Image (cartoon, rainbow, N blue to C red):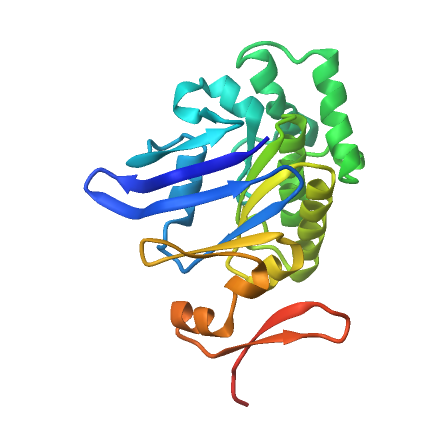
Length: 257
């Protein structure tokens, strides 16, 4: 299934944040969205999830306008992974994941045996089955982020939108989450991922879109979009794009010592 924006303008009444946004993500690929703070990444995501109305243009999923779909149908097509957070109540991990099944059974219906099975399958696929009976508030930030990804998997949507899934995580947990993102795309899911770190895009993205100055200034392969010149213009710092001996591409800040 294909998630696509067509001439999309985003923002709020009296405040147009960005416009003329044309993006698409296909099954089996990761599209990374980057841009400075305030460029509109979260507003774009909220509009792509039909949580905010488009100011102009439209968002389609599988060729159907999201504006014509109900919330349940949207949730069956697109799952959402927010930044890791601490729940207000000490839900068990399995209960957090079960919440992803709401789109298939209604808000107030009791989980079925199939729902429980799908939730455990999602946790198992991420190596988290042993945490099922733990309180969500008592596991690490990296584990919480993986639980949120498991919830999205239990939702069984072909597309996943992830809003800075590595934010506030330590280096090791960032790597674990990025590895899972790439694995999910390799399984055939389409993933839209926002990040502040160009290295993350180099590591997992098939394509990159750079949002700045009221629109998408460039979109394409990571090496074509994330150039030293563009990053310097956007962030006001000197950087160097380096290819390591193993073939990985990284962004190195030009800090004098």
